[in-house]
Length: 224
Image (cartoon, rainbow, N blue to C red; front, top):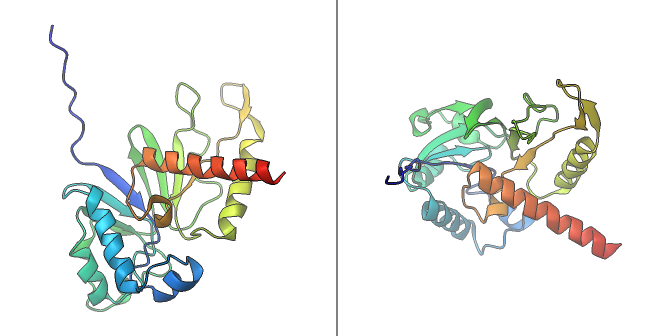
């Protein structure tokens, strides 16, 4: 018998946080992104996005998409492929513009929970310590809920959050089945610089996060 062909879903879902289009100070100060100008930064982020995202793909923006006016932000959105969904960030001021056209986004929300390939994703611009579904595991005992966020960039807050996650993951609790197990705690900071400004799938963000944490462990071992 001929093997059955399984067609991969042609449309993909990606996530990305804290692009901060048009944010000059962020390029030169906080993130020190290293672009010669904010225009160069914008152009690079558009290019990186369109290298991966296709017309029917979904991209969930985890807040702080643009520091610009609605007119400026619209000019960027017109160049970006895919269907866009916005989780509001504290710097997305273009939403308040009286000319703002919400139809550029499939939806705009402060918070959302979605299924992603048999897993649950909790979506908010800000990391939530005790997120819904945190303790859920699949049949193999692997945590099946992830808290996807932005807001903290690559700052001291990332170090605090990593420490918190490590602490929680080392705590024990009695599961519903009566077994003692470690507490699940799965934060994913979808900060655009971590992915070189490319929107990524849930599995890709999990790998990026694991590599980042492994580098930190290696660095700490070398320092000690």
